[in-house]
Image 1 (cartoon, rainbow, N blue to C red):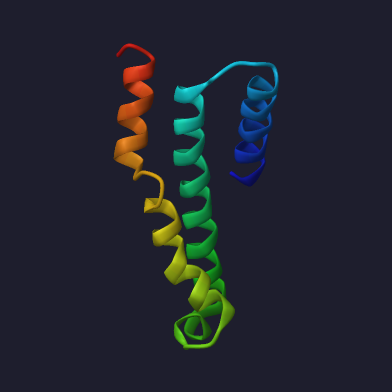
Image 2: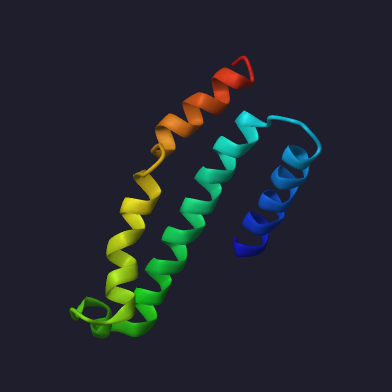
Length: 89
């Protein structure tokens, strides 16, 4: 998931640098990247177990902030709707 998100980001960055405005692709990139971030945080919690719920632990803070980062700038539903509208669907 991380490699796919990175490749998608590189592709979108290349398009922007070459004068394109890939609104739909950027919206879908945000959805992909936030899903990847949530997956990584959830797996880290599974690996670390109880330490992930203790205040002051790094993973506890990351896990808590993941939702805020995912919603900020537009939730998945808003980003998917924006992409569909840009594609004419």
